[in-house]
Image (cartoon, rainbow, N blue to C red; front, side, top):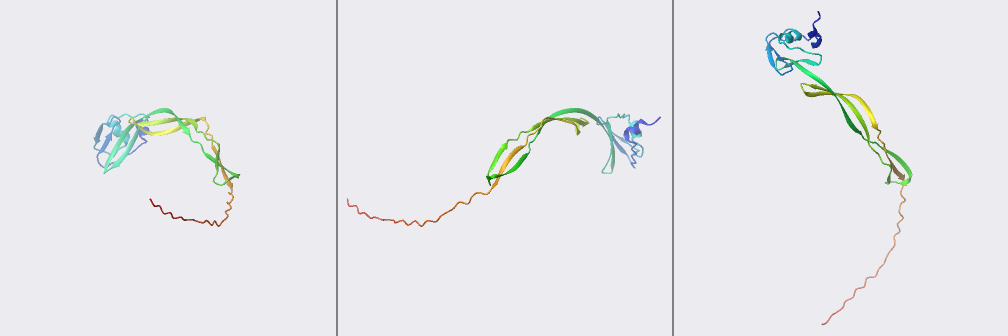
Length: 173
């Protein structure tokens, strides 16, 4: 009979020289004195059964080996997402430089995304985009930009001679 635990744990051999800490999906922590054995044997000896949605990992931290079993659950969610519009620019040789005109205003689109959310021990762990449906396409904004050179204003210089008169008046009262 093939060992189901070996399949579920990927045949992990712990090779720990000393004790091993085991953390069950419910958070219960136990210590196993002999860490030099397959993960499946350790889990079996601790009465921890694992299923196809459980994640088994081995961590080596500060000289300590930890065998952790976490439960994964999944949900599917949909969300509405705005699709931003782009701005397209066309050059207008008939408009003066520095002139911009909105020929067509842009409008955002909208899409529905379906995601698979993975939770490990009740906390979101990952999300995967499964499907995208465009409900409304974005419409690009179209702007024209003038390229015609502005005429150079002609300035003429005039000598303006003005006569300033000053008057002095004496007021006797």
